[in-house]
Image (tube, rainbow, N blue to C red; front, side, top):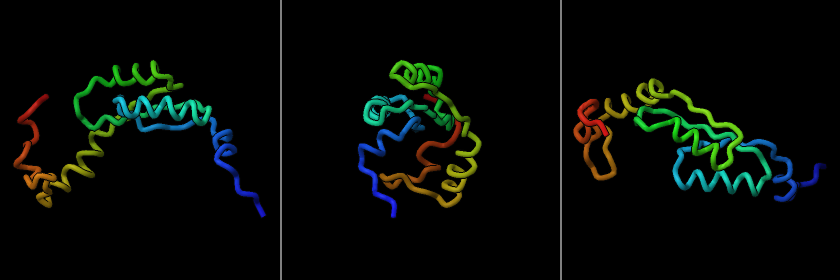
Length: 111
């Protein structure tokens, strides 16, 4: 029978951790926490879903905070096809009750 490992033993085994990284304060703090707690290299991965953010800046921030690597995945098409279009087809609602389609029609607003 295999002996159950303690939390300390599991932490020592980790070599690399992949973190879904937004570039904000929370994920930047989490990156540093994981690095220190698990003595592991952190690989930051950011999803580009078409928000128009400066992803080079997000990448630089991840590296500055201590990530070993920082990658951006272009998921715009997948996000639109798998999440946005189905939500529009069923007249999905925001938390405030406004219909998604009526609240911010695609292409009319640009931040």
